[in-house]
Length: 119
Image (cartoon, rainbow, N blue to C red):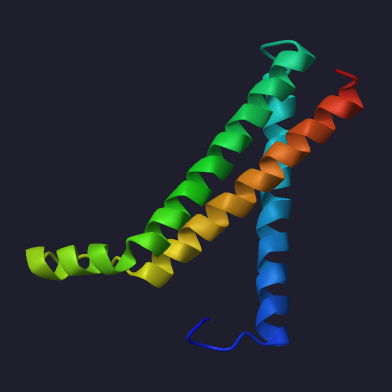
């Protein structure tokens, strides 16, 4: 159960935002794949670009899950130590949402570039 109901408009906005970040990540994936062609073989370029995108995706998912799972603990430590940080659970979830979808687009685009290059 969630604390607030999820309506169709919220889901639609979330899907649009995820799509935007995925497309940005795809642009990065294509750019990195093509840039790496200058220093390595097509297979090496697309494999490296895919690995970097998967790394960003994995870090984003791991950090998002950590932010969600440990939000109360981190907020408690923050108030106990009393240092002036602007960290919030919502901000952390947003940041790692961006990383996750960007990494997904990056990895997917690198895989598509490898198909286009025939490797």
